[in-house]
Image (cartoon, rainbow, N blue to C red; front, side, top):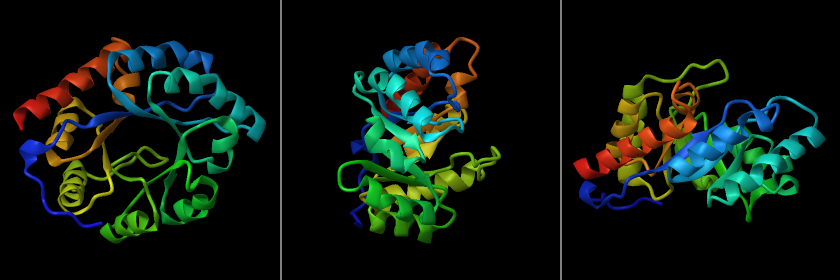
Length: 219
């Protein structure tokens, strides 16, 4: 897993990892999601699902899955590892080591297993050693809280210098997008930064993409 440090000038710009708002009605987000996917190079979409019974969850995933996957992006569910295969999703993102370990049998070897909610360096290393396809730093918790951005940036820089497993850094602003890119994140995740933009999701996603390219140029 450890790797030799790279020359920062050799790094490509990160790709975008787009969080959705909690989805109860797929049609309410479909047009905006399609616009965001068209406006930027999106590597993956984290589909966050509002609480519902299993059958309803699967129907929601199937309603939005083709929209995402036909654009070449991976469809990753926020939790719900047990419905990933039946819904046709590409994988799941789990929060915390215990949830991640419990989900692995349902996901491996054919589906993406990502892990966030990593409080310590040890947690992050444990996730990678256990089989995480990526680790994520800085995403909001269930109450909307997140670590200081300085702490997130330090964690991303450390990870990028030492480990092969990709890391995702969560950005709450365009300045954070650029900083995470320069720190060596392979992916930058955004959520409210896109959905809360009064210009619409497409314009917001395009702005994020421009900042990723600016950061690449700065290297």
